[in-house]
Length: 264
Image (cartoon, rainbow, N blue to C red; front, side, top):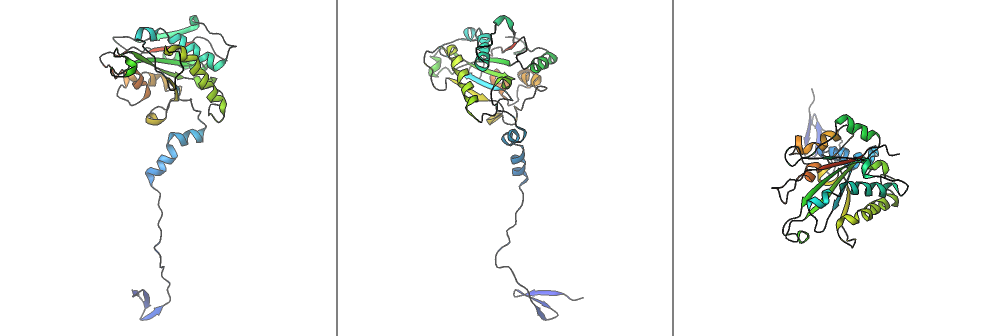
C-alpha cells in the first residue's frame, strides 16, 4: 500500500512529488450558536411578528402617579376608571353604568385577590369584555410625591382590551390616538389639574423584564391572576402589582372589575 507523505508543503508518493495547491489563507469555519439560534427564534418580538400577535394581546398596564391620594380614595375610583377606559376606546356612542359592572374585592386577611370561577372568566373573555385588575402601592416615604405621608399610586392591568383597539399592532396613528385618549380620560383621577408628562403611563404586557413570563392566553388567565396566591415567587406583572414593596407591612387587597354584558 502506498502512503502519501506531506513534507515542506509538498506531497510525495513513493518519492515522487505530486501536484498540490495549498491554501494561503485560513479557512473560515462557520457554525450556529444554539443559544443565539434559540433566542432569535423564540424571543417574544420575533414570536409576535411571526404569529401576528398584537401589541396588547397579553394585556395593557396603566400606571397612574396620583397626587396626595390614599387607599380609600383610589379604591373607590376603580369602577369609574373602568368606565372611562371603555369610553375612550369605544367612543360616545356607548353608555355604561356602574350598576352594570361586576366587582370582586380581595381580602385584607386571606386571599388578596378574589376571582369568578374559571368557567365564568372564560365566558367573560369569549364575550370580548375587558377584565380589569386594580392594585395600589405606596410611594417611598422620601419620594417627593409622597409628601412625607406615604400617599398612594395606582396600577391597572387590563386583559381583553385589544378587541376594542384599532390596528392592534400600532402600524399607524390610530392606536396611538386611542392611547392618548385613554390618558386624557384618566387625567381626572390623578388629582392634578395639569396633564404632566408620564403622570399616566400605558405599556403593553409581556415585554421587558416580563418578556418570557407574561405570555397570557384566555385559558391561562385564571392561573395567571392567581399568581399572588398560588405562585407568589414568580417574576411576573401580577405579583408586581400585588406587592406593596415600599411599605411591605401593608399589603392592599386587589380588585377585579368587568362589565356584565357582551360588548359588540
